Length: 394
Image 1 (cartoon, rainbow, N blue to C red):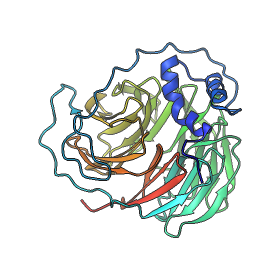
Image 2 (cartoon, rainbow, N blue to C red):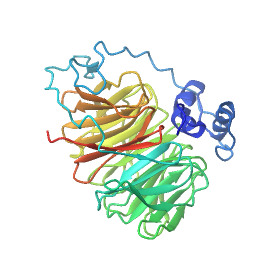
Image 3 (cartoon, rainbow, N blue to C red):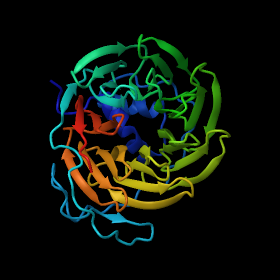
């Protein structure tokens, strides 16, 4: 049985951004100091860069005037505004996006699941990983463990399947990205260059490029087949904690501890106007299926919607009482968000109004992924649980 509190490694993984926002820096010295305070040892390599001055602390966010009942449809809106401050109206009809109970719950032995991904070519296969360095491939239909991938020297922070489902890229606190063969379980490539934790990985829709964001503030691109470095994108002032290619593969979005989402042209590395949607570090991002908007989750307890092509904010939604660590579009109309308090929330994209809140986990939701076809959603968290949810037809 897991203890009621998240493990020290997992607390560091989730909390470093919040701690670093307060003290103004992120590096492995910070990680080790915080780790020792929590009572455990190694947490990364030597830091090589000087601290970056902290931006102003985030302004207090008002709590929702009408809390959403756990596991129920909301009866009134949360704090939803447009950039001009006008309230969004009218309310969309409340509806249950997912069934109240999870279809299946898997118990991962990693001690806290930090990453999860669905295979795009096989709706029953997921990959999950966490602090014990291993990546496990699960059959979510049977609940059986199919394979374990081992090779990282520290905890795994992020996972993504290749578009054809034959490979997995994993980012780790050992400062590397590894490319795995799903069929054999062998690591085909070890991608290096980051001098701090790799927090996030993404695979381009055409399968040619693997991208990673790390604690040194850089976004690195490699050739997925050869492992050769292609380009390093410099612009963030703090660690990069979220990445995502646009559906057409033209743009790459990166979210950071500097509170900014930067947009990059994949072909040239040129930077487009940035999105400034938050007053806290950006932990998660997701592209809408049509590629016209981006959703972001932040330590400031809000969910942002932005136009990546113009760099403008569309709206901001309150996530309640917890930082938002995972976001995903379940379809073009609906956004899912996973929070620090373990709640799974769903919002109407057009209006920003809440649709449903479910008590999904007893601790933080660190990751989520949508099944191919969009009929199921998987969530994973600090409680060691991986839960599969059935998405209802709109």
